[in-house]
Length: 391
Image (cartoon, rainbow, N blue to C red; front, side, top):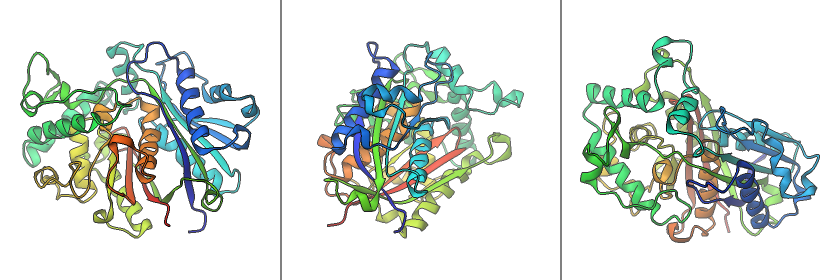
C-alpha cells in the first residue's frame, strides 16, 4: 500500500508510582530504549512527536524538547507536543504517520509520557475532568468516574445490569497483567471481591466500584516510525495496515453515550480500510479507562449486539485463550493509565506481540491486532490495524 508506515522499534518504562523519576526521566528512558531497539542513530531521526496531557499535573508545561536529552544529535530536530485528552499518545503517532506520508520525514520518534502520582487523587480527578465539556453546568460538575457511572446507570435502564460483566472484565485484565512485568498492578482479583462493595472495594461513583476504575499512573512509552519501504532494512517491522481517527461532539447532551458512535465508526472505518472483519483479528488492545468502557467497546467493535456485551465474556471470546483476546497487557485497568503514554503503550505492546517479543504476554503467532485508544467519552477515537511483517 502506497504511503504505508511501519513501526520498527519500541520502548516502554515500568508503569506505576515512580517517585524517583521525573517526567524528563521517563521520556528519556522510553525514547532511548526505542532508538536502541530499532538500531538507529539518534541523528537519523527527522522529527519527534510527544503525546502528553499534563493539564497542570507537572510543572513541565513545555515538554516537547525534553527528548533531546537523549542525545546531542537530537538538537535542532523539530519536536511537537500533541494533546487530545486520553488519546494524546495516538494523536502523536498519527501526527508522525502524517509527516512520513507527506514526505516531511523519513524516521520519526514518537513518545508518550505522563507523571501523575505526585498529585493527590482529588487534583488528578480535577485535571482529567477538564477533558469534559465545560460550558454546561451539569456536565462540568462531573468527574470522569461520575461520567462513566452515568453510562453504567443508563445501561441498566436500557438493557440490563452490567455490573457482573464489569467485574469479570476487571478480573480478566488483572489476571492478564500478572504476565506483564511493566504493569502497574500485579494482583489477582477475585470475582466476588470485584462484584461486591466492601471496605477494600468501595463505591467511587455509584455504581462504579474501585475495581471498575483504571489506575493513576506514571510512565512512558515510545515507538520509531519509518516508511514501509525503508522498514525493509530493519530487523523487525509491524505495518499500519489501516488507521482511522473519528471525533464526535464534546457535549454528552449532543449524542447517545451508550451508542458509542465515535468508537464504532472509528473501528468500522479501520476494518473497512484494512479489508478485514473483526473475526480476522488475533488480539486487541482497547481503552478500558473504566470497565463499562471495555464492555461498550465489545459492542462497538461488533463482538456482541448492543446491550449484550457480556456475551463476549460468556463464550470466552475476549479471554487470553479465546478467539480474540482483549487487553492481554492488563489494559488501562491493571497495566495503568498514564494519560499521554497510553496510546503509545498500546501500539508498543502490540508491536512486541506481532514481532514475537512480548515475553510472558506472548500469544501464539498473532498476525493482526487492533489498537483502540479513546479521548474523553468517545470523543477522540483512534483505531489502528497493525500487521506483522509478511515473510
